Length: 427
Ligand code: EPZ
Image 1 (tube, helix red, strand yellow):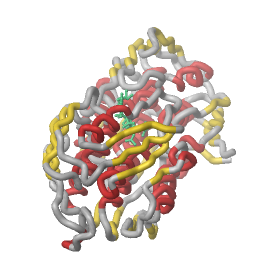
Image 2 (cartoon, protein in one colour):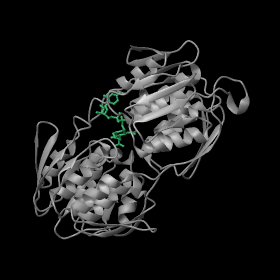
Image 3 (tube, protein in one colour):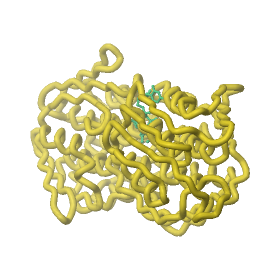
Image 4 (cartoon, protein in one colour):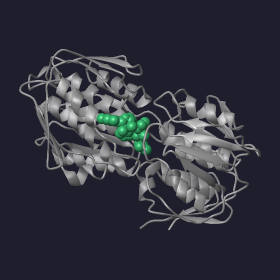
């Protein structure tokens, strides 16, 4: 099993280019199910999760052609509307095929994703939304069975809580439904806007993405006019940059007191991250060239509260906690999105961080002078990224076990950090 070994204490310097966003690419690739023809995608990141969803689409009967970061998917020949447990358990975002499958075929059988390290991760709102659109939902033997007689129907649906993949699933389903769907209390992430833009390029009619209210008018045509059931049209889709990968490198630059130019990111998507980095004393300069982050000797503590977008993203909480662990002073990290997203704390404590958890969702971080390298265990994607940053700042050597977690969401992470001067290698 791969490990990553890091010798810390080296300020990162240089330029790093950001890849396409994992959390944009996954729903975009799932939306190919809505099209009875080819869809071309560019700037797809080379990640384990992308391989997983490609395997799932191929298992359904779609064909895929990959050339570098470009992928063509043709879902015309899909002959199965069932996502098997073995494929879904590898990546819970597989739930994103549910909405498109029900919308196109009138039925779907998708394994319940189950929980993961950071929380129970229910999908009840995905299911309630499809029921509101006329689907009959049952759960048998760990599978979601969804069926409709005829087409899904447009509806008004209010999400109890803003859910990213829930919003994406229902937005996709509604593009082929009969009539208009209005979704309220939607998630507002940039990845939602990117999906809406893609659905519109495919001939869909989606408005309001990025706000709490999204309106979708179902299409009334087959593929390019052929009346073979409802379908969107072929299109070419470019994937937006990964704001969490960009944020990870920006925090690493600040934590190692380095000077890094992050290229290809979209600052507009990173307001919460940039705001907190500046509050910690780092300088963040935005120009045509990219986002330049320079660390400071005395890092300032600042409280963090994770919130739905545009608040500070939960996917950056673990990484930022490392920066706070070597700051001057104390801060409180309040995780409001997931119930168990402090798994990295134990590993950081083993490296000398002074962190205590209270009430399950609050962590008190008392800044220490430095961390010390240790053998640590990766547990989930973003916790693993925080351990890489900790290894980069720690005195001595850190070995991170179970790095397959990192490969799910970061493209060639050790190569990118090496290009910034880090002493990091996979072994
Ligand atoms: C997406 O997960 C992201 N994954 C996550 O990124 C991210 O952490 C999360 O959004 C929050 O921003 C993808 O986009 C593939 P949610 P998602 O549904 O959609 C509750 C990473 O590291 N909820 O927005 O699964 C849920 O329990 C991953 O890249 C329900 O109660 O998250 C949570 O408390 C980790 N019922 C809150 O909503 C539902 O039906 C937000 O979850 C759905 C969600």
